Picture 1 (tube, helix red, strand yellow):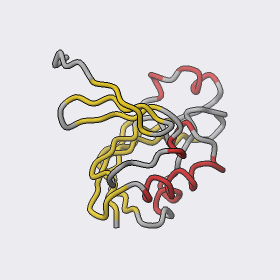
Picture 2: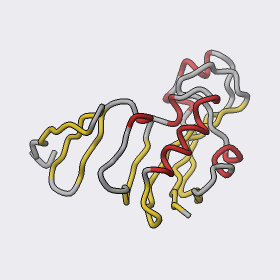
Picture 3: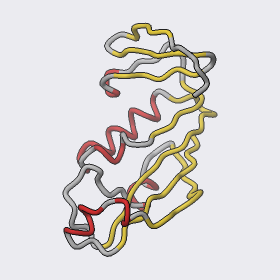
Length: 137
């Protein structure tokens, strides 16, 4: 939209795409070792793509690459009843609040079942999309 053409560079096993002060990283997040701690981040679909057993390690890794003053946005889903074998997987507020070194503040929650017909077909009565402000602590 801004008609910017990103430059590409290697970050170990990851590829970085940069334009101005913003850089996006592509690759295995668990192999990510940034040159400097990150001050900002946006997780639209990474955490919810992971099965439950991988989410705690993901949050530990996320905290390890963040600056002490870092903040970001994270989007999660939670349904009632939980019958959908994702991804996207449901991530509960309780699960987020157990993450060491990260503080979660709910900014917005909205009903989105109408835009996920497969979940409705499988018996889900409600699907909430939540946007969280995440602060390193």
